[in-house]
Length: 443
Image: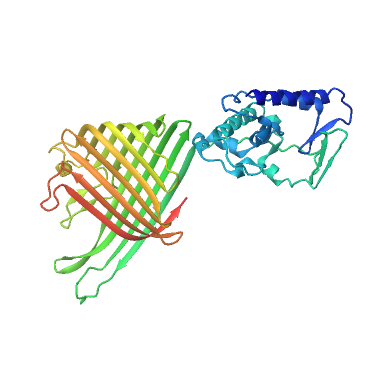
């Protein structure tokens, strides 16, 4: 520290001595920008070294990372990115972010962050001092001629390939507001047609099926606060031929039907842990009837809801191919409502009632894994236990990307609910699966 302070003092003294006899031609050129010796001295005096001791800086003059503080003020993208998304500051700094110096063997990330913070403060408090943007700085070509005056020693003039003079227009400073919201979505659609001749040796029913799936997400992130909102809509139809009164009659039935909305609030506690609260609702769009035309379910018959409070664990992996979120909620309020009284007992509600609630504990897990370049596995699992019943769901979706717009998808949904009537073969377990060829569009 003493050596760096001594070097800094010597540098200021040398500039001060040189400034004692200023003349009209006594100019120093810094990256094609002419400054008087008095301005240079004032410029060096204004430099802050409050982080020098903390960062164990040995010599400011030998460290190329300080160049952004000594050069005319430029608007650097890396400083803005760190201010908008603080989590990215921990990522390794590449040589491209250290323009325009040569490659370095090691980079002090903490030092880079402190310099970025100082630059952002300058942008916000004195935006009028910004002389050039990073894009404009990168467009300037290297000097084509350098001359040095031996009599002066440190006096140097750089002749640049661009003409920099007082008449040059000052770049317009555009202030961009941070974007805290990120909205994106995905659409999937499929169509299947099946035909069997009357004498087909195994038999079969001719059918057509269509399926549409839309997922929309709106996520908010600012400082240590996050808000994740997700809307999932699935609706699929299949045509079947049934025998009624000795004749084949075509009918249209739903094979997939889901309307689910999830909203989760998070406040960072420590490292990868967040205080969280999650609200979720789940129902369907269309009515479903059995072969005898008896109603089995419809919109809001049933509808499931839950409110969970706990901690959310979101680990960070080295690559972006794997994301994981596990929410542990020791306190969870789960409820279900059936708009049709006659269907209430089918969904674990006492006869004559339409509403039921349970207080217990809940675990929700979401996993996304991209592997082997074209494969993607998405798993959504939840487990709820209360004083009266246990409910669990596991949804696995495996996508194989054939091209930009087409993929093969395998979907399997396993459900366990001991509050409903026990099945003779499967017990309290329920299972659904699909294998489809999908058309995909994302935005």
